Length: 504
Image 1 (cartoon, helix red, strand yellow):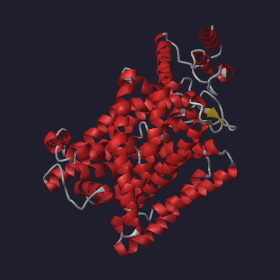
Image 2 (tube, one colour):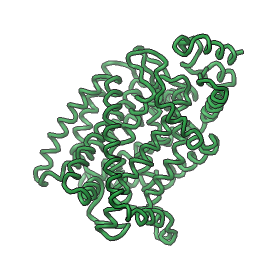
Image 3 (cartoon, helix red, strand yellow):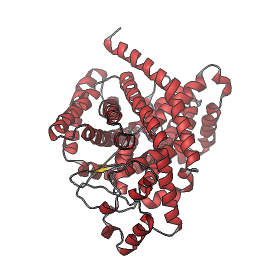
Image 4 (cartoon, helix red, strand yellow):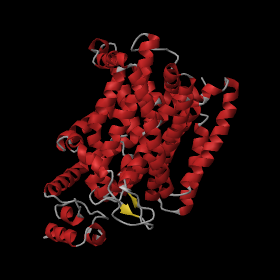
């Protein structure tokens, strides 16, 4: 057995144990708990989610970002090859029922995304150049008073995003172009692509967070809408097959006869694993982007991040699922099994080519490259925030950026199974620690939501004040104090009257 085979086997066993016996139950329990405690905030305040996208920056600073830019950074990380390759892997390995479980986890998990992103806003910090930073490592240190556990989370996240996810995105990007080359040329092409991708990645990340947010706020919407447009074309032109596709998804999702044989269990597990990899709700990654937004109330960014989960799973993952399922129904003649030799990128490429011809393969290859690269940039942003949490030093940051470039180069030449297993394990470790933290701190997100809704009912544009909540016993927060609110930027005397009233 080769070293790669041994590593695949070991990491696979660890991943299966982690998800089968712990993480799946934690994710589902937390999603249900937060949905109940927020009274279904992800459904009740859907209209507010769209309104808050246009929230302007409330604090000046060259490197501060708006609510929309913060959402695009998190969406760049969420909307990646997981939406394409991950969905195809789940369907090929677990059957169409896995799609249902991805949908369910997104609907419930968006409440978890709301809570963790709201907490990230409450306990964010401000950098020297006007930028905000935050995330689980920050609220674990400030609110739970444990820098050691904050550093532990930061290490998990760095390993997950800089090593696991970026290596996987690099692998998926390179595998997408395999169609164009014969097998003996593929290794050389992978090396060339790895060098080129690492170089361009270096150009972007050495440009700073402003360039990152600019790249993602342009690239992500363009590619997402184009991909959705292609999926709608495939769905509309095969509208007659849609009832059959939906029937397969729901039939296999509740195939209790297969449960005895373990198929449904595998389906549920794959749906939740791939759903988590895709939308990242509860994982502790998106809060790092959420904290960067300059808004007047933490709940505003919490709502925006909930919307990002919907965009990722309910819309974009569904696009992939419908295209793959149409291919299965038309070509394989069944809703499960399909072509046994096809999975991941290759399955999606064949599914699209079957509908629109070779041009479909060219498009999906280009889309994969763009999605993968935007995800690498979004992933790096998360990792950088946590590197600064551990040690905010320019030399350390420069060395880290070079290491990230090397990981991308190696990822382009890695193996499929090992890349997925490493991503799953590191994702699981950070998710477990984050879920425990947000359950403990969740009450402050609930109180912030109550405050937001009370102000909305009074006809006000909600403003958050740390003093008001710290008087209730909330652990000290670095931001959101009266002396740091820049009242002149938030409405002058009207806001001052609210501040006086809230503190009286």
